[in-house]
Amino acid sequence: MRTFLRDILLTVGAIAATGAGPLLSRALAAPVAASDISPSSWPIVTRMADLGSHQFSAMRRGTFASRDVPYAAELSEMLVHDGAGKPAASMFLTSFVAKPDDSARPVVFLFNGGPGGASNTLMFGAFGPQRLAKFSMAAIADPATPIVANDDTLLDIADLVFIDPPETGYGRPLAGANPKTFRGNDGDSYAVVQAMLRWLHDHHRETSPIYVVGESYGSIRAVLLARDLRAAAPRVELAGMILISQALWYNGPDSNGIARLPDPVTAVNSLPDIAALAWYHGLIDNTGQTLEQAVRAARAYALGDYASAMVAGNRLGEVERSRVARRLEGLTGIPTLTWLAGDLRLTNIRRQLLAGRNLALGQFDGRETEPLQGVPDDGDRDGFAMMLGLTHAAEETGRTIFHTEGLPDYRSMASRHPLEFEASWAFIAPPAHGPELILREQMSANPRLRLMVAQGVFDTTATMGETDYQFSQIGAPRDRTWIAYYAGGHMLYSDVGRLAFLKDVRDFVGGKMSPTHAFPQSPVGTPHP
Image (cartoon, rainbow, N blue to C red; front, top):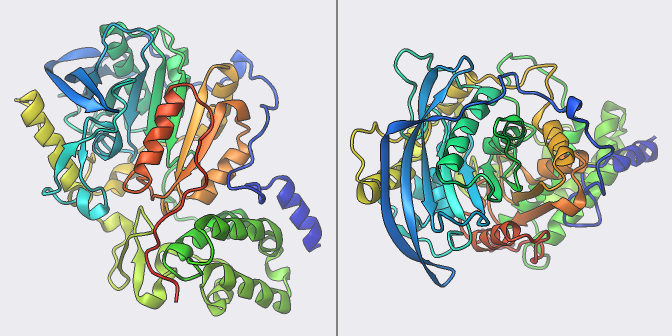
């Protein structure tokens, strides 16, 4: 029985046990007909946003990739319409344009996640002409974190446009409009498409190669934008999508309170992540084996005997159960008794991995820790306080570069309590297709669309195992899909992974289709005894 189950799981396996990356399809199963493209629940976008009264600009220059680059910095308010054509909200775009008349020059639109997150994480973490000197959770919460020149921005090869969706940044609902108008996957995309069309029209860049960069929930937005831009009038075909810490699988919190049986696939997918975190924290050998070797060993076992055991469930004999638990301890350093007590799975990796040290892993980066006793639930965290350093950076940029006046306070997050804001969000409802299916449709419908997927090895929010699984199932064409791993967490550009990531983005926008580096290495957090 176990051999039969293992063969099934390996046939539809989440990832290739013999390699560091996921198993990609060589081609899509069949071309997608135009009539089969999943439509938005909102109307097709047929008008661009209106310009708002707040328009700011300044001429700047910087040294990027050892080149002196003069550029225009612009902060532009846009008024977006609801489905009936009535202006309903303001939103702001911050752009940096070095060659305004070069139609062959790429334009890169960037946005973060949430939902309800502004774009300043990407701006001051990796891509903007200025960045925070440090980018740990402590640093982005500290208004005293210095702002420094970012020599590694892409501004020498592409123009950059950072999008703050409605209710984030300086954007607000308009007087008399329903404040929840754009709180939903399709409504959010409807608003952002209007703003993108306005920017492209006003800058005469409709024929430029256009890329979108979406982080976390922003990866869902990127996929829906590809769909809605292609259906819009005027129509826009993307040249590429860059999905950072992708969350295509996510469709809202479990707010209905229905308890479900544990999913064996979730346990199988999580084992390589647990091994990577155990390696970093010294629960397993991190001097005699590399990070890649630890992940590879966990991946091979996950798709073999562990997958069989998870599917067998309570049919698994006690002798075999104990054997599996001992092997899991060897791969992760987590005691056999812990694995047995949890039916061979961890129910809360962030709180269980370092429980013996009375520590919990960070919400976004498993290399960071906090005291286990009294650790708050994610829904109880203060989102505004977590982002005070980023908020200060955005407001300081507004004051010193744009000399902004008459704008409300900048919001790095739309709500102090992000999960409360998310609870009002209209996620995809049946029978509509999910983002992963829409991505497959768009890759088939647009044969020039290229895809880069960037994953942090220590991400505790959108995990490596989940990304491997998603992209083994989506069927994205191998010759147009690039999946790369970095030594980072959810914001994978935070430290040692930043330069490798930006080099890869630069190569991708420049037309290359495969990373030049191996599976990432990382300094260890705690030496192995």
